[in-house]
Length: 316
Image (cartoon, rainbow, N blue to C red; front, side, top):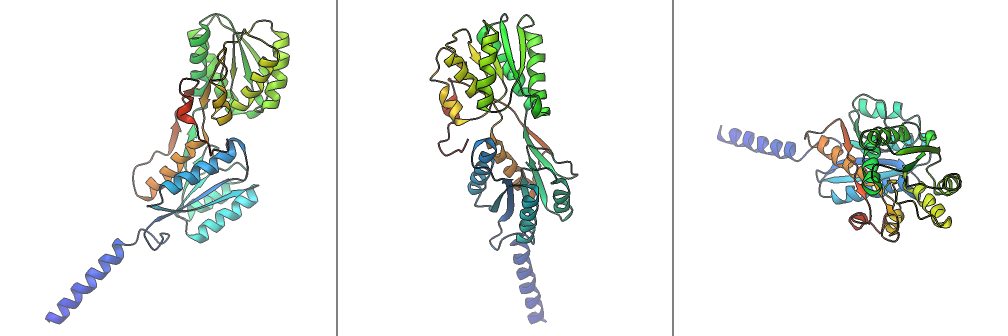
């Protein structure tokens, strides 16, 4: 009887050790959580920096996380990579679905029990978590910044990007509504452009020719702003006191202290927000509380604080 009881105790302890040492069928042998990362295959710019910051965060969490990161050129390639992550045993996937057509494979991953954290571009699938920036708040903060530099009178050019859909719509909405509240006497002139420095240069050159006096420029993107600043410099204009931007370009940051005659600012919609998406994935796997939608607040960067945001290794 004593031998039988002793055997039961040994079996119970052994079972307890096995249970404690296993997080799920997808865990590694050392108990780490398996997180996959899907991002577009771009070698430069904002989109490229998403993969860079996602991998940095996964490495920082290496004590708890084993990860695989894939980059793709289209929806078909990203779908294949998602299947590879499922085979690998991913328990969570952080996906930046730059390509259309990802709704079905992501929904299939969720149905298979994988936690999916959707970064930036929204995927319409039940059960997905989402991490994104605040486009409307970027416009709000841009308006406050410009008024702080030029006051409540003057002329401000809005560099709109109608081809970007809701991105520009929300940024413009935040800007115009805030300006109407805090500086209703400021004259707003709207011109269409693109999120590229080439368009910023070309369109701003035409705008400067058409307007003899401009006090500030509300630009929604750092790349556009870089081009616009070149146009302002080439035209030798000294009337413009402030220009905004958006995104978080390292090149743009470095221009801020070099231009003392004009306040250069960027409303952050930084690719490093993807680190929050990796954090959400880990929280969900650990059973901790996580919001279904995480909106990362924007921050204004200018010559007073740009050093806090420099990263020599960032591709953007």
